[in-house]
Amino acid sequence: MPFLFVALASSTFFLACAQSPKKEIKKNNINTMGKETITFGSGCFWCTEAIFQQVKGVEKVVSGYGGGHVENPTYEQVCDKSTGHAEVCQLIFDPKQVSIDELLEIFWQTHDPTTINQQGNDVGPQYRSVVFYHNAEQKERAEHYLSELTKSGAFAKPIVTTIEPFKNFYAAENYHQNYYNSNGNQPYCNYVIRPKMEKFEKVFKDKLKSKQ
Image (cartoon, rainbow, N blue to C red; front, side, top):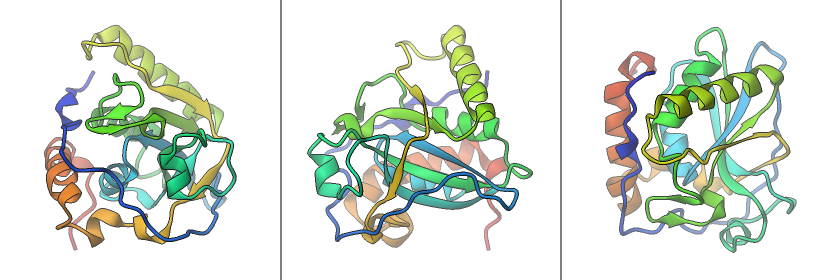
């Protein structure tokens, strides 16, 4: 198995995800033009978005809420921990450029999948570790990767990531989209996202998009 840098889930003294204005609903599934969609929850969606935006073959990343029972939730509702939703990022990617296995590798190596409903100081069910698969192949590959990680003993504690069928997705408020790129000097970006990005770019430099 590839080297894992669990240390990416570093702690912080800053709160995650500032409040934001109303957003519009969005529901996605498989794109018909040879692209695929997968949905990941790995803590604050600002971090997840910033990482996958840099991956070659990932054409679009949308931050949002998924897996819960409340339709078109607001950020404030999700933070109340009663909607069942996780903060997630939905990826549209070109499987000819990046495989599902590569995306799963990045997913598991860029957060701590052993903490229940928590990433660093971000605590709550909205920060749970989850893969929402959109087709049978994604389900099989995610379950296989999880099994191999567990057998390898790569983590000192049990992996708590759940693998679930895609149920729903609601885009977060516009304020949350492209957050790191638009708010790089914000404290959470400086102290949480930037260190993750620096480690990610060193380990996955061969999977990064070309700098323009």
